[in-house]
Length: 288
Image (cartoon, rainbow, N blue to C red; front, side, top):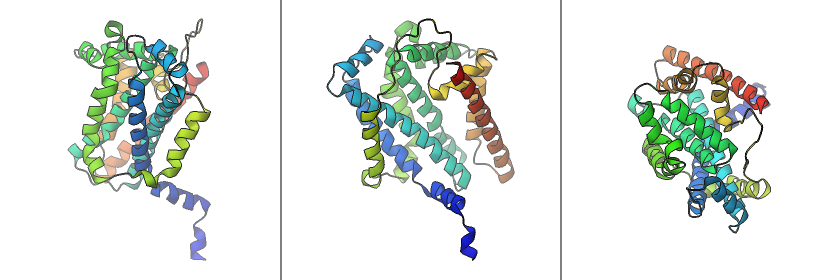
């Protein structure tokens, strides 16, 4: 009778907590890097949109490789979030503060890596995202212009700076942040065969998004993880919406682990921030 107390929800929760989210995220990242190398061989940074369209229409199996890169990248980001959520829920991490900050810095780096990938498409979403990102970077006092030139610089150099960061700069930074963790935990491809079958199947059945200019539209939605920030920009000054608000949740994440009481406050703040961001994202999505 005692064992009957574990209902379906309890078993589902245990299954989710024990799932190998981190290993699957790493597999998706590896597939994304390999497919990205193939795409980079055909990409022309001087003509982003034309180059992307050419890959899809002219290069043999180009649409498949682009879709594989897109969906494996999306899978990596989503699974990384799941992995982080499970780690925080279990509360089993024993990292010192510098090691924890270095490791969790992979989250903003991964978001930037994904974001630059959208910009490199050169379509309506990519152009809008690049322009907004440059505007946000320039709103930072003192260091804004320097950070913009370092990360984006779309108006002056087109996609060249973003291309360099997407292929090398952000990859190297993310590798540096995650390296101690990757040395400790590995992922074998033979342990994730279902995922490795799902990604190619999805890439064959569903084309990666590609949006030409939306003539006459007053609102163009950016990447899905960017929609909440895009909506917040409608209500607050650029610095507070585009810099202070994202920085707040990143600082809260860096503040973990902490003593039990302080840790709980930071977690409540992160949950409240995420709930508000989901609402803003939904509002922005409905505008499209």
